[in-house]
Length: 245
Image (cartoon, rainbow, N blue to C red; front, side, top):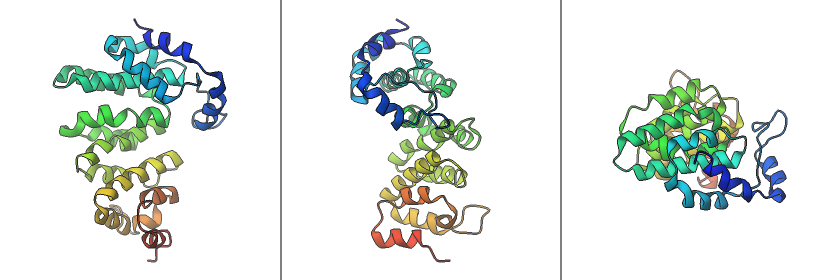
């Protein structure tokens, strides 16, 4: 049972897709996904496997597959974990076990799709009515950009419930981050806030972060800014891209 995911995924390998996926997820030397290995399986195919097998899986069964060298096997493991968590419903002991499993295996959640398709479904949901300091710690002190990305993207669950403070505060933690993938994630979450409360995002952009003197829109990385203002009207986008003090 421990290898059920690999048993189902490995035969689905599609060599014609491997090179393209490897380029897309930047697996070359010095790139953020360096060394990752792909089977060439597209996400809809992986999701169909998850639908078929998740009821047969237990957390112990995921131990070997989450550590797989194959990207799609790790993704399948995480999507199975999402399903186990979702269907736990009021079983908080099982939900807590899913969260603990997730947090103890972040070294294998090592590309943006693995983060984005799992973190707010599990960690974000768990923290809806709980202390959220773990996200601040991940964003500010995460050992990898992936842990830091988990810290901000998990806030999507809060945003969907009309709670914006944590996304804004964690975006401030990442305001001067050096990596493009963090800029994109923070900008994306800010855009989601703005989609629901445009005035809040305008205020955020036009005021300094705590302890700083310049408006955030003048100091944040351009990629973060462009993502944040993507849904604004053209005049507003131009205003922030050429902001005058």
